Image 1 (cartoon, each protein chain N blue to C red):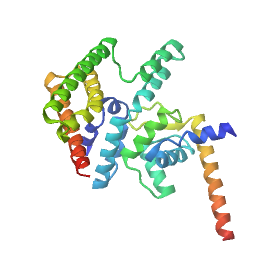
Image 2 (image 1 turned 30 degrees about the vertical axis):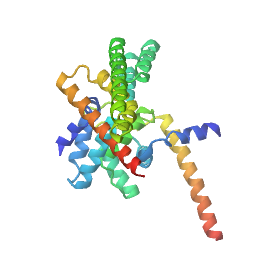
Image 3 (image 1 turned 90 degrees about the vertical axis):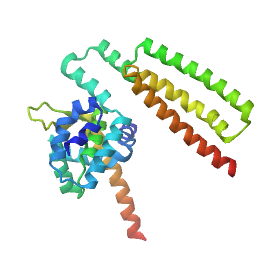
Image 4 (image 1 turned 180 degrees about the vertical axis):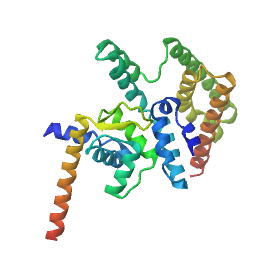
Length: 111
Length: 173
């Protein structure tokens, strides 16, 4: 339980980059992607197009925390993948969001 | 649009520049995009995440699990940008001398003008000013002396004007 709370806290202090960081982790959950592919994928799943300033602000933070890592590439478009820490943080965050969503729906249904 | 990349710190550009440029080139130019890149550049200067991730990359690529190197890198990261003991001593000395000059100036001005807002502003600016002096002396030491004077002078003037405005407003309340 404590480990889960710790994993969930990994994304907590990203400030304005929290949401973009979460979307990036969700995008990378399917497999390694480079920046352009992430923006396309995020637009498809969440309907928002991240600008490069926001995207790389969040990517740099995720990389610094060890939640994602770059892969070697000959191409100038460097792909990234989730690390095991990133996977745990994503799982913990999604679980906590799911709990909030379920509670909200239950309360709305009984209102 | 690629000129916007120049607004980012050099170390950041070295690490993310190419891929950032590729993503930037794929997007349609708009005021929103310019604002996003400007915001990212300010953030990169204020929160240089790159230092931490870059040291990890060095470890991964070249140095394996060398604990001595890891400890050295962590010490550097904890101490901020690379400052030699000499840099720190010079910056501290300049800060102490500035504090003495500022204290003398404040005492002299108080004798002449009493508690006028312009004098009070000197007192209130002294704390952030000393931090500014230390920072600028340490980090701009290798820059041209004109650059140092300009940056420090502009910082000092800006700080004084802000404090003066605060004191003037405060005296009228």
